[in-house]
Length: 146
Image 1 (cartoon, rainbow, N blue to C red):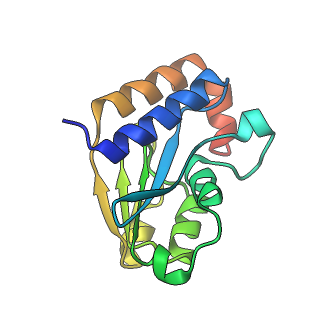
Image 2 (cartoon, rainbow, N blue to C red; image 1 turned 30 degrees about the horizontal axis):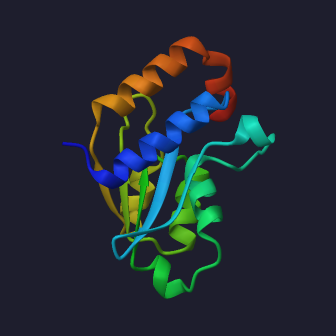
């Protein structure tokens, strides 16, 4: 059975895909409640920074440091160095990752800085990214800086 918060992140990823963007979603949770959710909007908004995690943080709005330090961020894909930096900057202590088979982000950097990293390798997340990368390699390579 899929984690309910991962399912929300997956739904965000699907929303991004349906908008013509990259299917990566994220949700920020504090005390079992959603603070913010989002999806990669680089294509839709012409943004250089709106990866799924960044969009979820943006949609959560300003929060006291104590909130971030007691939150969990879910993401459908292993976080890139930029998103990892934001997670570390705000002191989010736990990251739940849908999958890291299609892309291995900066997980070791998170771990080295005391963040608990849980990788689920969820089949739906893997299939969604595998399909997207196969169909839109140019867009995927742009998103990860290749």
